[in-house]
Image 1: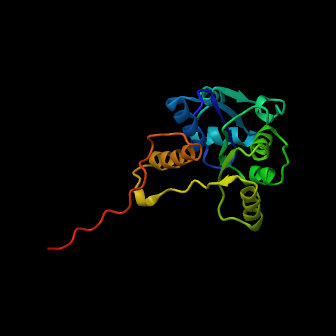
Image 2: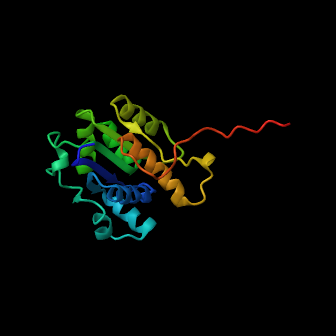
Image 3: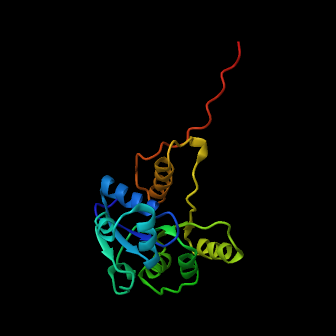
Length: 197
């Protein structure tokens, strides 16, 4: 991976702000990736309600933070090379904006740039149950090359805490960009039962 690889992290108002926070924390700990953060208006509300973090605390985890309305920011242009973008969590509103190419704010514009430049776009879509509009928007994003990745816990790993479940998902996200991590071991298969003697 290039020494100055860049990754965009978006956070929206869907529940699950901890995924975006943990992703930024791990990228800072691992090093080698320059992070660009953009948060929706509802994202700031969810962040405070779910994590207790203030805006300045979250922005301190990123290398650069961009206001949602700054559509002239570096990440709004395809000429600004990045590894791609993660939206963690991704609301159904943002999913719809990405699926239909609205680019009505910096977050959806940066996602649109990733799709048009054929860069990796990973959306941690958070909603349940799903209606037909949600499913069709997921299909549209997938057909354009995006990755819809609902943050579902791997219960077969027998996680002992919410933090372990979040780490597992964040590790899977990092793998989407070829970023090595130590958050969760790769699955090695079920242990074979010992034969009776």
